[in-house]
Length: 477
Picture 1 (cartoon, rainbow, N blue to C red):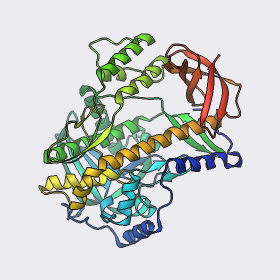
Picture 2 (picture 1 turned 90 degrees about the horizontal axis):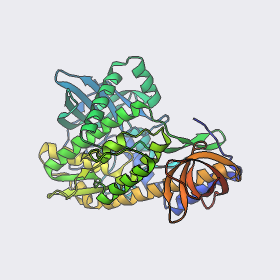
Picture 3 (picture 1 turned 60 degrees about the vertical axis):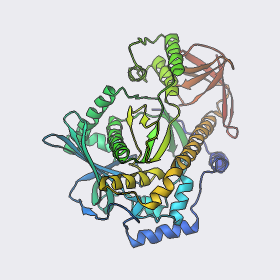
Picture 4 (picture 1 turned 120 degrees about the vertical axis):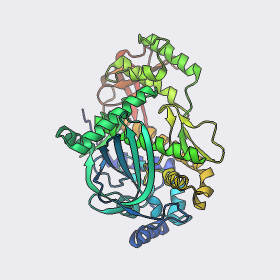
C-alpha cells in the first residue's frame, strides 16, 4: 500500500483543517465547567444513574474479556469474550457504562447533546466526552476494574439468538488488542479469538440468508506520516468483519427487546426505491455485469469483487441504494419504519456510548424493559429529541469527512499539476460531461472533464489542485 505524504509547508494543511472545523462548527475544546465536572465525576467513582432499572453491580471480573480496536485507541467502548456451549455459543459483550459518569441535565450531559458524536480529523479529534471519562474512568482499559453494561447473548449452533440479557457488572479486560494483533493471535491458535472467528462467520452466513447488503467500498483513509499525512485505500482485515458482527448481533438483540417493550430508539434505513434498483440494473448492463432478474440487490452487491475495476465501479454506484438512514424514537406505538434494510433486521445503536450520544439512552431503555419498568425520566424526556440531535451530528460528521478528503487530495497533488495518473471510472455525469475517477496511486477520487464508460481504465492529467478551495481538476488524456 503506497504512502505519498505531502509537505505541511507553513502549516497550510493544519491551518486549513482548523479553518474547516470552524466553518462546519465542529466543537473544539470543552468548556471549563464541563472539564471540571468530568474530573469531579471521575474522582468520585461510578454512580448508579438516577432512576435506572439496574441498581445492582454484579462482579464478573472472572470473564476474560479483551478489547479489539484500531492502534492507539484509548476510548474503549467494548470488550468481548466468546465461548462454545452445549447448545451453541455464548457471547459476553461489556459496554462502557457512560451513564454512571454523566449526571442527567449536568454540564457533560448538555455538552454531549450538542456534540452528538466523536468526530475525527487527521490531526485531532473532537470527542463526545472529556478525556477524564472517555479515555480514563469509563474506558474499558486493560487490567483495570470497570463498571460496565454487560450483555450476555446465547446463540444456537447456527448463530441465531436464543436469549439476550443486559446487566450492570464489574468487569476487567485482560488485553488491549489491535486488529492486527488479534489476527495474529487467531493464526497462533488462540482459543477465544478463534471462537470469535467462528461466531463471526456464522453471523456472516446468517446475514446472507437474511439477504442483507454488504457493501465493500474501496474507502479512502487519511494516514499520518512523519512529514504530514497520506491517503490510502483501506484494506480491512477479516477480524474487523467478525468483530463488527458482534456489535451488529448486540444491536439486533437490543432492538428486539426495546420493540417488545415499546420504548427506545432504533437505527433505520428504508429499502431502496424501485427507480433506484432500475437505475442500478441499467448501470450493471452498461458495465457488462450480469444481473439476472431472480437475483436481489443485496445478492448482486455481495457477488462483486472490490479488487476488480469493473466491479469496484458497480460497488460505488450501489451505494445509492443505502440512502436515507436515520433514527426512530418511540414510546408506546412503534414507528412505521423499524427495519434497517442493509442489515435486513431491526437494529439499534447500543455498543459505542463513549462515541455516540444515543447509545447511553438506548441501553437504559433495554435495562428498563428487561426489568419490566419504565425508563428513567431523563431518558424519556430526551428520547423524542434524539433523532434530531443525532441527525444533525451525523450530517456535520459527513460534511467534515468529505471536506477533509477533498483538502488532502488537493494537497497531495498541488505540486504535481501537469502529471498523468492511472485510474478507473466509478461514475459518469453526462449532464456536466465529466466522470468520477479513482486513481490507483495516490488514493485520490475526483472528477475529470470528458466522457467515457463506467469501469473504464483511464489516464488522467492533473490540471489544477487548490488546497484552500479543496478542489482538484482532472482531464481525461
